[in-house]
Each structure stands twice: as structure tokens, then as C-alpha cells.
Image 1 (cartoon, rainbow, N blue to C red):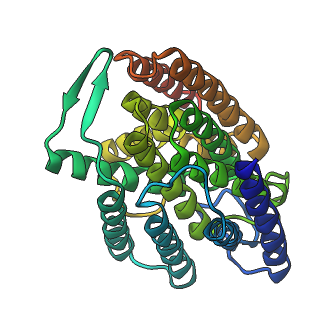
Image 2: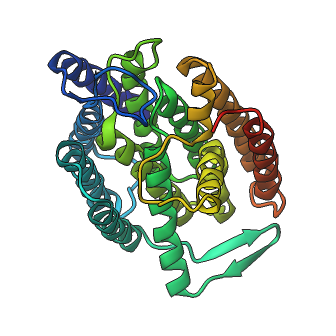
Length: 338
């Protein structure tokens, strides 16, 4: 019941503040790489921050029956710091070096607070990692996820739908594995996105999340996976994270490979992601959203089932589905415009 109350508070706060931002109309002008051709407010992420803030205030007055992880409260401050970075970038358009450098520092800070991944389970065994490798590998995980979500936030309802499904799936994994702090964060992420989608998942979106919202969602999701690893007895649940957002990760990494092969500057903006090429080929924003959302829903159910029966740490699970999505990407890419 407590989880539902917190989720309800985050949902309605996000819904209300995002609605206000729609009326405020703060946005930027569409450019050559946009999937849109008109100015639309991009301040929806401020509703995300408000939703989390309301839930955090409520939590401070609640005597929980289970203790939260020691890193939970200070990690919230880092979420707000990442959101502020996105806000400054939305307003001032920071250089890629400044933005990525600041983001790396914040990623390192959250790994320091929660603790790094120290082993990689493979079936019945686990590969123990030296602390330094585990630390920088964990920082890389957070950094990659945050940027992946930011790169994929470019179509109506797209990021919000896929990440809502992924966050809800992660919430289920946290409950199965007995990780209360991670479960709260995953559920709040889900509720916040639910409060945002009524304005965004439309034929004509009323508002977008902007860098504030995209960085917020990616940071919360990636740090929740770290919390899950730290809190849960089943450390193999670590693999739930990449599996749940595999459609996004596949699109980003394969697009990156294509750009490297074409000798393009990786720090410049582009519109070469598969979802963007589908839209240029005539798909509507909502058709693309439903396609990726359906794949995400299938993966979420597989992740929950495998976690429940103890197969989430299977050595072949992640490579198998990665291979399937890579194959699908290349088959689709052959018939799409550059």
C-alpha cells in the first residue's frame, strides 16, 4: 500500500506540473535533425523532478517497516543534480565536452555512494571483478544508459512508453529479489512517466521531456539497477537492466558503429537512429512507439519469468536476445533510407 501511495503522489504531481508546463509553452525550435517540424514545449522534465521531489518529501515523514539502503537519500540529490545539468543544457546548449565531463563526475558519484558491481554471474558461477574494474565498469553503465535514453528521446511517446515498461519490469524484478530501495525508485520512475505520457504520447505531442527528463529517467533507471545488485541476494538480477532496455541499447550501439564506419564526427548531432529512419520512411511516431514498446513488453515478461525461475543469470540469455535484435536491426536497416 505504501508503494502505491508514493506512486500515486508522484503520478499526480507529475501530471499537474507537466500540464502547467504545457500552458507555459517553454520550448525550442525544431531543426534539421528533429523528427518534428514545429516548436513544441520541451520542459516536461520539470514535472519529473517535481514528482520525485513530492515523493521524497513524503518519504521523509514515513516510518518504513524496512530500512532503505544507506545511499538512497544522498543518491536522490544526485538525481536532482543530473536534472539540473539537463536544464542548463536545454537553456544554454552546453558543449558536448562540458556536458559529458560533468555527467561522468555525477555517474562516478552515484557509483561511489551505492557501490560498484563486483561480480558478473554466469549460470552457477560468477566472475569476480577487481574493485577498480568494477567501479569504472559501473560508471560506464550509468553513463551509457543516461546517454542512450537521451539519444532515443525524439518521437511522440517513444522514450516515455519504452522506459515506463522497462521501469515497471524492473520494479517487478526488485520485488522478486527483495530490494526495497530499488523497488521504490523503479516504481517512482514508472509513475512519473505515466504522469507525463498523456501529454506526450499523442499524434501531435503537447510537450517533450527535454534533456531534463531524458537524463532524469536514464539516471534513475541505471542507478536502480546498481541498487538492485547491492540489495538483492540474487546478484544475477543485474542482467535485468540491460535486457529491459535492449531495444534502445541495440539501436544506439549499432547506429554508433554505422557512423564510425562512415567516418562521421561522433560528437555532432544526427538523425541516423533506426527509429528516426523508420519515421523518415513514412512510419508515424506512434507506430514506431508501439513497435519498440511491444518488443520492450515481451522482454519485460521474459525478464520477470527468468528472474522468478532463477534463469536470469544464464550465460546465454543476454547474448541470445542481443543477437536477435541485432539481426532484426540489420534486416530493417537494409530497406530504410539513410
